Image 1 (cartoon, rainbow, N blue to C red):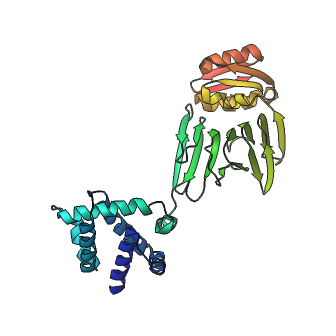
Image 2 (image 1 turned 30 degrees about the vertical axis):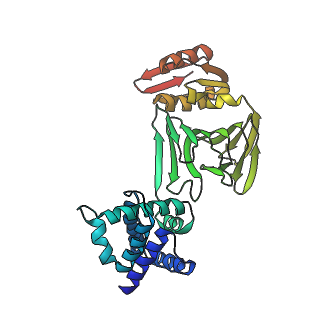
Image 3 (image 1 turned 135 degrees about the vertical axis):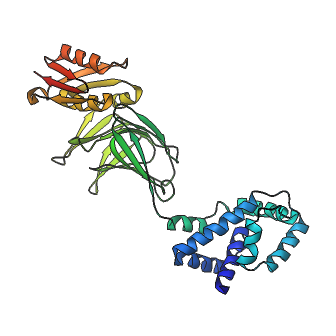
Length: 335
């Protein structure tokens, strides 16, 4: 019990910004000992902040009164009733809170115990999803903007932008990454990682597709494939074949890669099989290609007026000699 009283006093000294380095180490050791100790420290911190947000202007007399009071309240039992009381607080405590507010603002940006406690907290994950037939926009805590295409999932840690800037993508995302000195941004896919510092690019990495493609609009990105770097320049698209593990590089109209985020369907060259997969997600339908022979046919398509799936299929029949049969959400395409 005596040890806990002493640690409580060290915590108070830390919040005031007057703790000695040797005592700070003792406080660090206490927090690291157990989850219970970490929670206790968090509680002390919350109680201190409660005072820090309630005060008014402090003067030298109040400071002297505070030092006197500190000598009187050396134990947790003496402090807690004052912190949890629902009655009116004495005027002295309101003045003391002003001092605390000034000190908290002064030390709030330092590394100290806050980062240690954060590192000890259990890691949790946030999941953002764009259902089939829809798109979603996500703004991450570092200012990065991500558009998720239909049927896509973005996952990131509660430690994002503190310990690291990593996200996991299953699906297609258009990224406008905020620059942050000394902190790269990583998009993890089932095939490779995309490493950037600040740029605009599109990644299509549905685990149901036999390939992953990355297209760069601005800046510079590096693909990390099993420790081997693959650089991409603006205006290039790199495709990785999941079956062979090989990369192919091509010059493209990079703006087309983000057309889906602007409610457009635009491809200079695309196979029917690839287009069917994209249309199925975008319109939340099940398109089945019953003749593999026509799946490899390539063509150019540019739709800009938010056409319905029926209108798109009609346009396809004008381009390719196919027959389309629709039964609700199930659509069958054959020669």
